[in-house]
Image 1: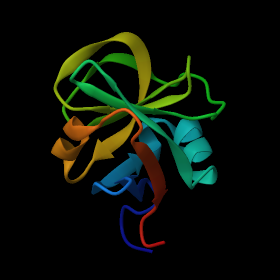
Image 2 (image 1 turned 60 degrees about the vertical axis):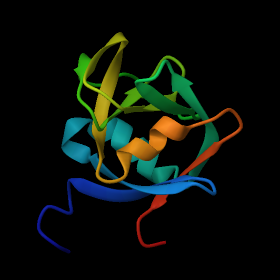
Image 3 (image 1 turned 90 degrees about the horizontal axis):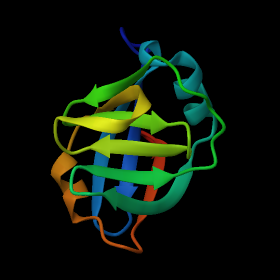
Image 4 (image 1 turned 90 degrees about the vertical axis):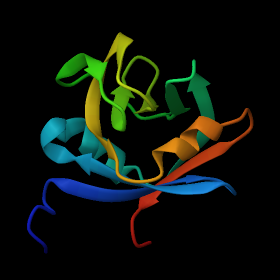
Length: 128
């Protein structure tokens, strides 16, 4: 096991047929939420845009809010407990709803700006 691997979990987000992005979930940011997500992999759902600054996918995960915040930076990944969505922030913005910060998009963030209705997100463990 490499140094730092206990807290950092490497995942891959696939925008089916369009792009692959590397994600890093960080257990120390929200241990319960990150644990629920990793135990539920693989995840798949419709891709959506909230305005032009947030791409997100709906899930059926049952996790409450943890260390909630409303300020997010470009590349942050948040979990919105009220509708079980995993959100990807494309710019530094305040969120109208409090969310749990769970990690960062490590590569290819700009590919999310191309999300269209009908696109599918799939999240899997890296290396699988």
